[in-house]
Amino acid sequence: MTVPILEANGMRMPRIGLGTWPMTGAECTRAVESAIGLGYRHIDTAERYGNEDAVGAGIAASGLPRGDIFLTTKIWWDKPNGDAIRRAFADSLKRLATPYVDLLLIHWPSPQLDLADALKGIAAIRAEGQAKSIGVSNFPPKLLQRAIAEGVNLASLQVEFHVMLDQSKLLGICRAAGMGLTAYSPLAKGSGLDQPVLARIATKHGATPAQVALGWLLAQDGVAMVPKAASPARQKENLGAASLRLDADDLAAIGTLPKDRRFVNPDFAPDWANG
Image (cartoon, rainbow, N blue to C red; front, side):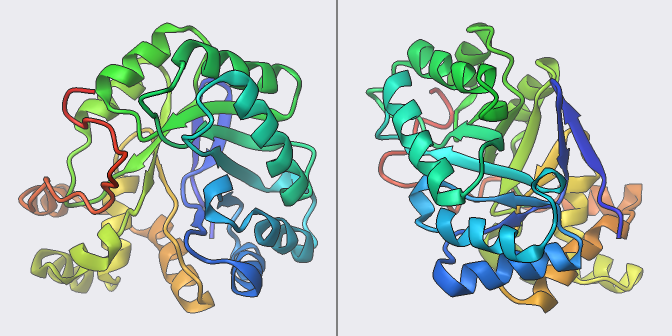
């Protein structure tokens, strides 16, 4: 299975990765090792997930050279400036047992975020070779534009994105800046998969509704995704979306689904429309 590559501002990211939240411990290690064995080369984790040690163990157990894996981690929103981010990231590297990550993200913005200083901090990490690329996660449009204006060459934005949530505004901003967009919860926490339109398209292509949902994201330029999957069977199913080609009728039908369903919206989330 050949997974297409997203190229953005010097970053080369496999467009289908393994999301690891909320797996921890031995379950997470097994899942990472299994996914790599099936052909995944993109693993997504975060400081907040409490599984960086397990992810690192899974990568080590796979036997593949570190350079063959695209590894993303994220620093939690309670680190509002560059110094705090750098201290937290040093701990992340220790837990991951790796000298670098391929992509480092600010996980969420907070009201206390010193945006310019935080971006300066992650840019310094990149300059020192401990992160090959940098970016942000869960930034709404106005804040993303402010971040881009700081001129630190961001490679990626990670946000919730799926067949039932429109992210065209953020995607347009990313494309204009040469950035990629990574979709988390790309299967809408499973809530989107019972839509009859996905079932009809899946039957037409000999695929599954999950593969159709992921295929819809793959049909959009500049989009990668990190579906969580613990079992080898589900991992294989998600990876199979790489060979699915949806036609114009399929895309139009999916376009009729509601596009206002957000499943990740914690108390500390930004103002998605105006932030």
